[in-house]
Image (cartoon, rainbow, N blue to C red; front, side):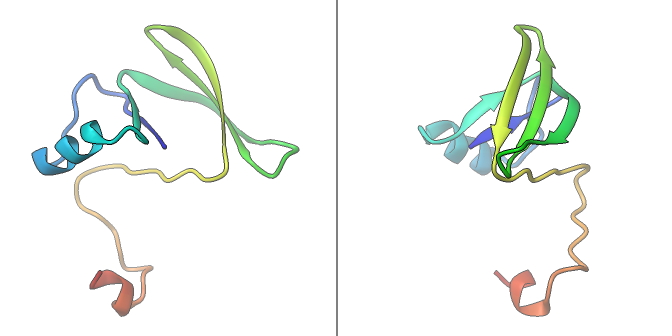
Length: 83
């Protein structure tokens, strides 16, 4: 899993950051923005990203986006919201 953050610092709960930082399965990339978001011919998603270290292309099976601090969960069923 790769977490892209446009900012330099995280604004998540410290517990979440500690857990993510301790995992060897999560890569964190600060100051990274997605410039182009397209589908690929291999049933995946292609992200063209820019950061201070240059341009990078990431092929992903799934992309989850998060904007803001207040989640909008009204599209989830009541049983999923309890999890």
